[in-house]
Length: 175
Image (tube, rainbow, N blue to C red; front, side, top):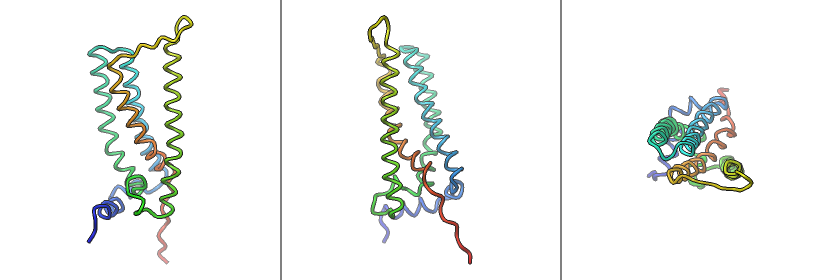
């Protein structure tokens, strides 16, 4: 009898989307779409920082969030299928190559997230530097969207890294 994770693994391996995303260029196009959805989320933070508190900031951010969600959710599912569940499945269901891909993705993602956080720190300080002093005024409306955007970025970067780097499956030999 198959358990839940075996069913999920089989479903991931047999998804029709796997044929669409089987090649590296196709997976990289999918990664680019997911990265664009992340950029839309980050751009929404800029709108809030510039125009909050206002109805304009709220409405524009919610629109950008909705677009990012509508694009991002199916793309994340397709990326999990394209990587054969490297980041989704428990380790006991992965072979050595997949375990190596998982570790490499997490290591690279840790570096990328560190760059994002460091850049955010530098940008916040540059933005707030006036008259020889650091004076940072943060709109309260920015806190929840910033936390959400950081969480989504933290969750998504390992998946993007894995999908970008995963090798193409071997060709079937008909001989």
